[in-house]
Length: 361
Image (cartoon, rainbow, N blue to C red; front, side):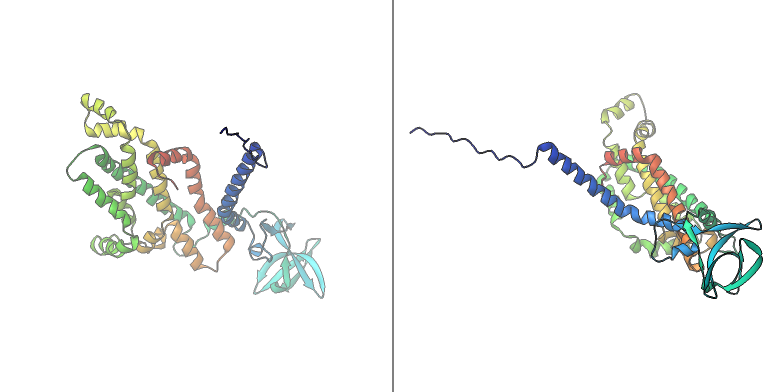
């Protein structure tokens, strides 16, 4: 019996393909922008607060755009303007000085007559504009007046620790990773597993034994040594990254060097290391971030404010004064700048290193 083929019903999508692709791409970009803003908004708020005046920080409702006191020139001096309520009338006067809760005001149009008013009855006149002076004020402010310590001291200490930590990590991890990746020796895999297992130990487990060893046995308390010396003994994470990359170098390349009489150290120094620049840059960025942001280590070992790092300095600044939030945010912004600059210049090499080592996320 002959069968009659019926035409297949074709359901056409309601929208053309190019339109669906465009909507999908738009939705993906909007999602990425929303996620980016979610993480970027706190940074923007920090910058906004860093550029505000003292009065503008606590203004209700808060504003994103920083405002500063309206300034006028009186007798050759720049002074802020205030709205002053005198006998039911509001006048715009310039503030000359403050003493015992009273402010000495003067009319800029008639600077010979001064008026004293309690400061709680006046209101600053704010106009949109950033206060860039907050940054030098914050950095030069002596958080410990008796010791002459300011944020430049904290930055110098943080840079010293970060630079030596980077040197120690690269010097110790690269040869160890090469030995695990390219040289065969008895028990290599077992030792490598032991090295990897150290990554599973949280800092809280080793904190007390390390503190006893460094401070009681070695007498390294209140010095940078407990924060620098351990980096010269390698760490499991960076050794693992470098080993994974060294394993991708063709063995034929190393064999050719061996035929020419090169030693393993010469192969490591002249072949493996030059090819590992992206991975070394990645480890450099990771180590700098760890050393720059480390709070627990300096808090544990450093007691002299002259040796505090930037992370400790921010906490110390908050505890020593009634908090000037605009100056604190200015100092925090300066604290963030080296990280942004480092990532900006090492971005391409850093991403390439992450791709080569398979480290994502």
